[in-house]
View 1 (spheres, helix red, strand yellow):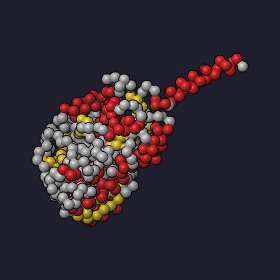
View 2 (view 1 turned 45 degrees about the vertical axis):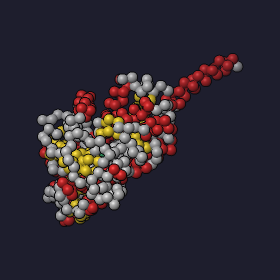
View 3 (view 1 turned 30 degrees about the vertical axis):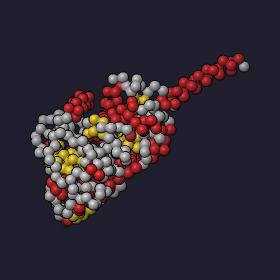
View 4 (view 1 turned 180 degrees about the vertical axis):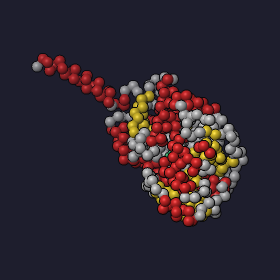
Length: 442
Ligand code: PHE
């Protein structure tokens, strides 16, 4: 009897201590769940992104944290798998009691995870998923990058106008939301600009043999081939296409950005182009400081994943700082109120769809795997770098008002999800180069 009396308060305090540790808002730390592909098909995406996020968190923690609280990152590997992404986010919101979530890169994985964050009312910010569906999952879901209707329009316009292509082939990963989303925009805009999609072929992530597709594409005699996929498949496809005698340029989107692209595709990629979120050669002091800090820490030039993820983390930390509490709703509202946040990849203001409107760069791959800026694309509503020159006529992306085709600067589309794009030609000077493979430039 006596021993019971003594042990009851002990048990109570033990339970209390346990509760403080595992739940109840995470005690004294700001807990951020990070879900990324650290292994699997697109491991490069997750590794670069996590590097950017860790650097951002360390910077803020070193300066005293957020309102005196240190940031704790809970980093989980989803193995490049959408259902694993959903499982991790479920654990973040049910067990880990995170205050907010950063992830994913690939749109299909963000789409799988977003409804879980939304139901739990925990804000989720993706640095780089560009498919429009992602933020349609609800008002707790944000993205700090441009969307595919804008990116796809830039790619199609580059093919039709800058390269003057009339006939295009499309090579699509049918099970990938990003790829199929871009396919639609590219084909709409390319057709609107007077071009013709002469053949469409498909593949699945991880395929090793593109022989049948290449034969069919070659037979259709295109001027360019749009390949809106991820770097691993693109690199392999490029190689096999060149082996079969196809010489025309391949064009793609941000999914190409990885040091592995050139390691896989090699010289087959020379003279090909892709759209991206930033160029490490941007003269902006903010970009240059980020690039040199990142190089000092990781020994490589940061790719767009590292840059977009660094920005997303900083945007989230800034919102948490402004939020009156660590409640999901308070952080959500503070995120939504983000105005002109000065990111490495551009200024971020979320529009009514919780998407960012930002500039796009078209990158040309040159011999040895050098990435050079071929064109900076002006996106209406996005702050432009000062280095750009005059613009060509605007092409409205699908969804923009069909009543106003090819008109310059229509303020109506300013914050619309399908913002118009204008390529501003900027000569690629030798100074704007980087080696995608390593930090070491010869
Ligand atoms: N935008 C791609 C997607 O939504 C992911 C990606 C972003 C890949 C940036 C590379 C660079 O699936």
